[in-house]
Image 1: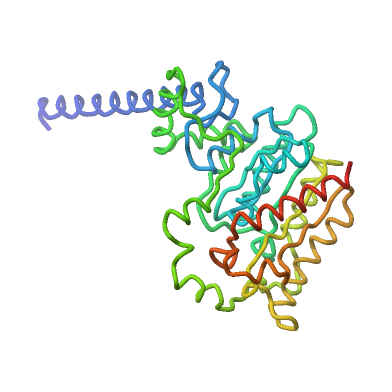
Image 2: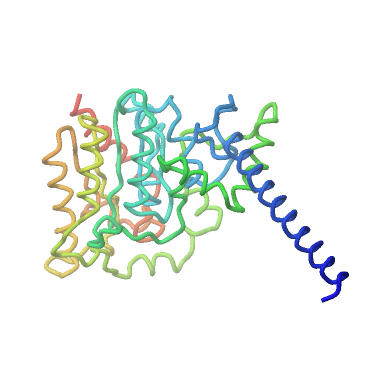
Length: 334
């Protein structure tokens, strides 16, 4: 090998090393910036920043909403409890509620958000409302998820949080966060997290779709298939409440379903549904100031097709009735 070749290779090695160091420095600088700017308003930054976040999905906005000190009550679950209005519950109970729902989530995500909300309180929470749908009936102790969820955002471990910041979507949110902080009157995501999906359905003409009623009348099985247990979601919820919310009033809501999605009495589907229900009935019976509000039953409102968009997504009329029952349950704990 001649001297010119050796010299060329040495220059390339030097360039590669310099490039690697520069890239590492850039990554560290962006990570430090993200930590300081706190793109999801987790409260971890030492800087004094504007409250709240710009409009974004509920999965990430929950980090900011869940630590907002103005709220002392919270609603957890997915789209099956989404229409329950924090403002309506506040008017009926005097408790300021925040909705920490996230569509297409199950017990694993709800437990993480519940843990986050409780850890952020300087005073004990005044009430918790938790939607218990069929996803809570799983026998799988891992509590499997269906859609991606930013678990890292709610971690207690600083290392896990910093690792989570190292992703492209955080970089995108970082730019929005900088604009939010610099704007005089930035557009803010709704603080209480309420998201009325009925508006979206109406815009799409979903309710007037002639095929909707036919689909709605088709019978489906929704019991979950777990007639013998165990029910690890119920146990994990019991443990979390005992550890972080002793004495806090809790309402467990079995969300409404249209009549054709209710189990046929005497069927295997009904046996599974009853077994799951009993697990949460037992939780409520053995924990002070805890109630189960069950709307997954045959009642006139659940037989009216105009009250539903599909088998498990109801309209505002039913939501108002459910809110009243939740409020009545909480009133009994006073």
